[in-house]
Image 1: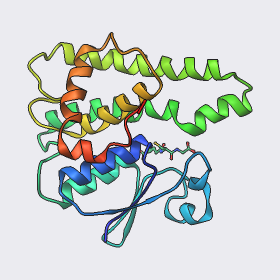
Image 2: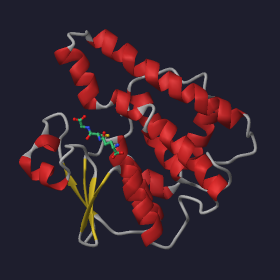
Image 3: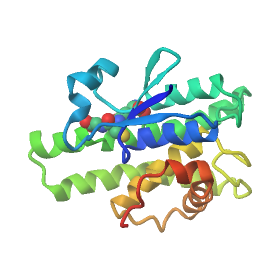
Image 4: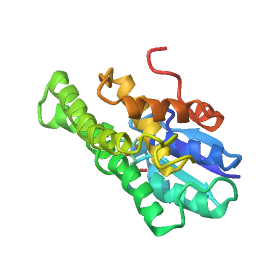
Length: 210
Ligand SMILES: N[C@@H](CCC(=O)N[C@@H](CS)C(=O)NCC(=O)O)C(=O)O
């Protein structure tokens, strides 16, 4: 049995749920409340000493880091190829995915936001400004890339890839934080198209503002 240790609203967990669904892998979830700090419990630290969800138990392995997990799933299961094998296409997909997973997401992770407030004494207003700043920095760059490729249905072309798998959860988060995304029409378009696919719908947490 494949077990995803996760939190529904965690975007890194959301990425892995999408990938498992796209590949048609059956899995169970075990939830850890991030708000209550369960990711730092001894039970979870046994799974991932970094204290960050997700962790995927699969084939006798305990995998952490959503991108590494998705690479494993992609290589292990048939179905749509999420990371292209052509070196140039692969680099392009990885660049878009990592622009989100490395350049936006970690700066706005819960522990960073809590550190800003609790240890650095910053207000909720400053915390929210920080959050928005890094979303806009990352999304502006991606919008420029997508604008230059108007024919693309999805982030990397006509097929879903790791780039869409990273984009949709980050978009979900931005909506949750009520960030104005009027400046990103192509991101909106691509994200909406991918979000409507059954694998994404089934992976989504409850809709923001619902
Ligand atoms: N690079 C990691 C990031 C994992 C991560 O940051 N997970 C977040 C939820 S999306 C988390 O567990 N946050 C808990 C915390 O900040 O204390 C991955 O892609 O799996």
